[in-house]
Image 1 (spheres, rainbow, N blue to C red):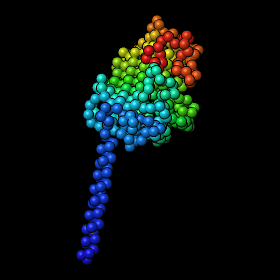
Image 2: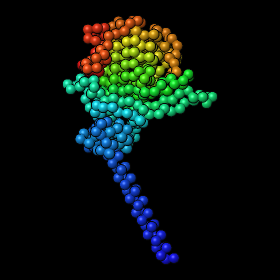
Image 3: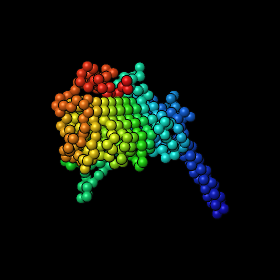
Image 4: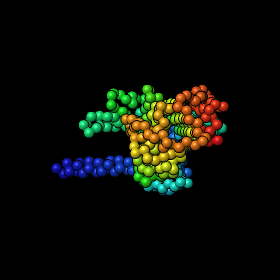
Amino acid sequence: MQKIKKRVTIISFLIVILVSNSFLSMAQQAKEVIALPQNNKLYIDATTGRNSNSGEQDSPLQTLNEAANRINAAKGTGAITIYLSKGLYILSETAAFNPLNWEFTKENRLTIRAEVLPGESNWSPADMPILLSSMPFSVEKNDKGEPTGGQNFGIMIQNSHVSILGLRVMGEPVHENPSKGILIRNYPIIWEGKGLEDLHVSQCLFIGNKYAIPNHLAILSNGKNLEVDHCLFYGIKDAVVMWNSPATNSSFHHNIIADTYGAVVWTWSAAEDFKFYNNVVSNANVLWVLNKDGKLSYSINNSVIVGYNDFVNKGGGPQGFGEKANPAKLKLGKDVVLKSKGKLEIIEDQTNKLFLHIKPGTLGANLGAGLFLK
């Protein structure tokens, strides 16, 4: 009997050691997860990176999700910058940034950017990091319990003072309308939370194809001080939607939007100080969607708009674009070119640095719209 008790004691002791070692290993792993490089710069390389690496330039991570995990777990203040090398980044789950214990400011921001930005001497269109979603969609049902569709999110930003720069952002290779009455939506960038301010998206290419890789909505915004500039939106459904939170002091400028099959901008929550200027629009389905009451007015300045089916609507949602609104709600500056028919000349040579830009010397090329800041 005593021998049995002795054996049980020994076994119990060994179990305690194993459990302790396991917890120690988990603690060490957790410590590794929250550690940021001393300069608060994280490097990601989809090809050579490993998520067990330090994240320093000579030891890059592999996924944006891992960078988000480390930043979310960190405590402190100051700027944090994530650099993505060129390559293909498959988002099999949402890269959710929600750093509750890190303080950012307008000057000290969270920046997610390409390692080489458009306009730098060694940049070419092929150098843009490519983000492609592959994650499952949620299931949505109506009041009768019938499925109506679903949604997913690529990059979810849940904090203020963020910049996203120089990325090529695609949708997801699925059927957007798999059957009648069903709509599934991929939102590549969503800004979601309460009391958010200051999101800057610049020098990014949002591209999709409604039949093969639908990019439902490039930027879904719920905050104020949104600035979207020097971006290309090509073949997507909607470019920017300002949805719930009051979007004061926001702007959309120096962008090229071509072949959209939804609406260019939705100002559901945008205040009348929303600025729309130096944009070039070619072959859009709907130019603008107002809130469902259609009361607010907005100004369009120094822009070229050629080819659209509807000028301005009101209401709408994921399943539709609402109904026609009073066209006087959009006030056109004297420097605006507006033509309901036609199409602008866009460069399709992928080896050209001006790939998907307006052909020099043609209508719209002189507005400075596109990926280059100068």
